[in-house]
Image 1 (tube, one colour):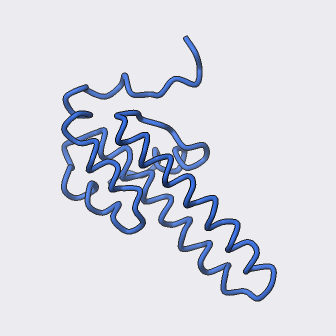
Image 2 (cartoon, rainbow, N blue to C red; image 1 turned 90 degrees about the horizontal axis):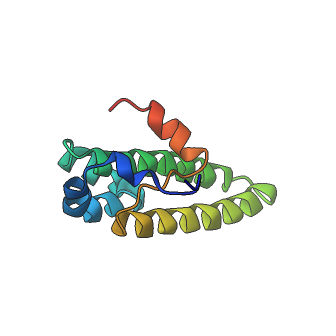
Amino acid sequence: MNGDQPKTTKFDQKDIDDNKVLAAIGYLCILFLVPLLAAKNSPFAQFHAKQGLVLFVGWVIVWVIGLIPILGWIIGFLGTIALAVISLIGLIKALQGEAWEIPMVADFAKKLNL
C-alpha cells in the first residue's frame, strides 16, 4: 500500500458523504467553528475542523509577525501565501471526501481534545 494514500478509510463513508461540505468550511479562517460546533458527531468533519483551527492559529501568528517592519512584512507575505495554498488544498480534499493529514498541522490537530 502506498504511504501517500489518504487516511479516509478510518471514517465511515456515510459520515464523509453527509459532512464533506461542513468539513470543507472548516478551512475558511474562523469558520472552522462551524463544523466544530455543528457536526460534533462527525469524526470526518471534526478531523478537518481541528486542522482548520490549527491553520487559523497559524494565520494569527503570521498576521502578528506581519506587523513587524521589513522582515515581518516579508515573512507575513510568504506565510499568507503558504497558508492560503494549504487551506485551499485542505478545502478541496475535504470536498473530495479525503482525509488529508497536513504535514505538521495534523500532529497538532490530533492533540486537540475538543
